[in-house]
Image 1 (cartoon, rainbow, N blue to C red):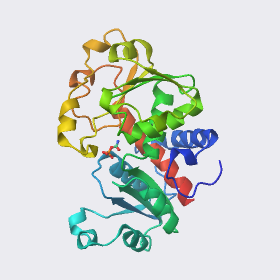
Image 2: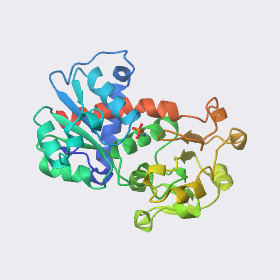
Image 3: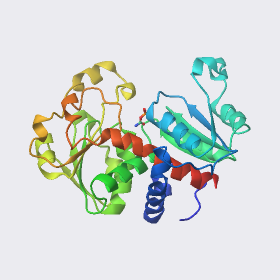
Image 4: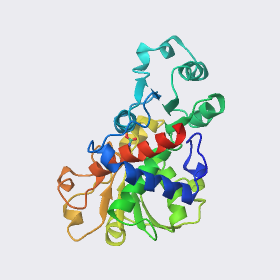
Length: 297
Ligand code: CP
């Protein structure tokens, strides 16, 4: 693949770059499971800068780095840093890059990761920028689809908050490379923005029942409460869709979710063979090992 220096958007990767990274993730599976040891990133330090909450992205990057022999430093809670004294993002980045070989950045402002890549000499990986992109989530989603279903000519239903979900926005761009047919299921006010539909993909707007009948993959998302300008607007759509075990009785579709979930997948789905969302969270480790190895090699 062409050398990647920063990973800011899924648009930065070609189809062959994506396939290369997914193949590399396969090589790291046993290391991610702790069955094989590797020290290829020994002596390297990763800085985790999270300006928004995270469990999976932050911890799976940390796990990936440590299982490859590297070290991790964390910004920690914002109140305990000089961000609380008014230090700008630019200054924070310029300082932190003095201490690390790579920066993983999650920030509430769309475009923040691109900005970071323009001012930092060390590689920057976008771990989510507002309602923008979340490219490492997309890679682990593609990896999950490849492992648990199939990537080419896929029928996938994107369900829930299609307006604000950055994982959906990134995933659609990638799926366009693999000839996917995409079913869109959402409340009226959370429909996919027009500009995200500007890709070479067949979109079908439908209801949840039709999606379950047709799709190979049901990709469910949480309503992104924190992105609503108005709490009242959130309350109007909260709880408006929920996937249950009963709905999946005659379905072989796999169920994915970037997590965290609120109430959009009933807990009785967890025990079904369809449910792959916890394995999906695990696949974040080998995929992020592949990315870290690439940008720090
Ligand atoms: N999927 C995801 O980005 O999860 P976190 O917000 O917990 O990192």
